[in-house]
Length: 257
Image (cartoon, rainbow, N blue to C red; front, side, top):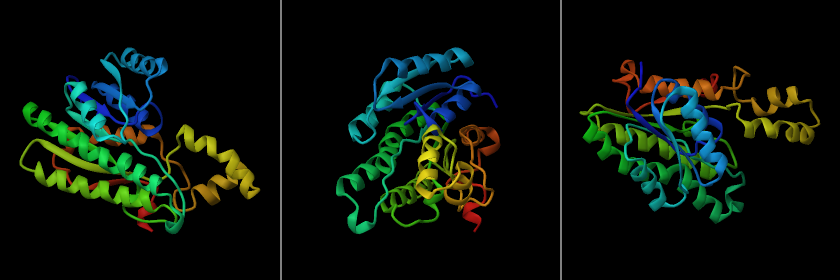
């Protein structure tokens, strides 16, 4: 399906999963707005390179997803939002009784509340256009849990719940909302962590990848940002018009356990 003529806004998208999703949506013909909290020349150059590569309009808009007014302003500044991909997220690992309050607040704000604020502004635009797709990037941890990740897991479970409610509120319209739940995805951030993790466990990088990082992923393979992006494109297609209010796991079997 061609997404030509559609505008996609992807939060937290100057690297990793968000950037992969932006590339795949642009490849499908959508104009894209990428975003992060920085405002560097390289951010704007990245958008320009996407536009040139795929022959679409691509812009970079700075917005801090921890701030409600900036979340809403991002969608307003985009001017149109046919496809909204809520991807922005951060992580912190600590036991509940030692979890810093400011880290809890930041994770809930960026991983969950930002999706509420962007969706609230995007839905009227979608209704006016008569078509819309909301794709929330949740996680396998939106369906399962692990110790020491209380804020992240609470937020991602919340994203799944928000997706269901959004779907029910738009069920009689040509608007859908779904959550993609990735397992471990090979991003530059994950790749950079492998050598240090290998040293910590006194293992080779291959051993630490298979036995530590991918311990809960039965396929023992990372998902790719292209696969997450391809799943987002599918959810925007006519074939997915009756898929709404659900989750799609891209986790190598993690949630089948």
